[in-house]
Image (cartoon, rainbow, N blue to C red):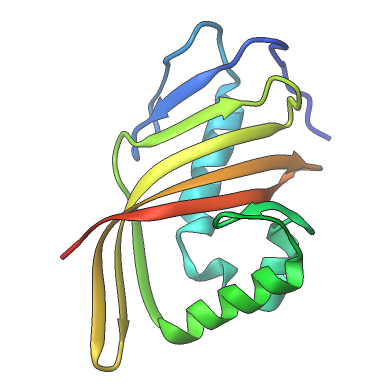
Length: 161
């Protein structure tokens, strides 16, 4: 069991470089361990192929999702179906976190919930087609017994080339 210090009623926001340095952007201080954990989750789980199995999706996404790409209260089976379809459509996927774009804010009413936004570069390929550019993602993450659960997910493509 992890013990963490919390600031109740004070939103804490961090900017994070891909190298891992954090700086407080809002009043208050945050838990550097949380920042590191979220950064590692984004880099080493979310932006990799570690979520491309049904088991991994079920373990990482909430049921139901509060919000999934503009839809509210989406059942996990719909998320699994959508993710697997995307992975089949784009079998070769590469994502890279853009430096200094990771922002983390703690939810005032739910201290184990964090809003996380970041930009990333992407290159998706399938035979006959390649999509490249930059995107932006917003996640709502909950610390659930030492693992991160995605409660909400949205984003957009910023630029294609």
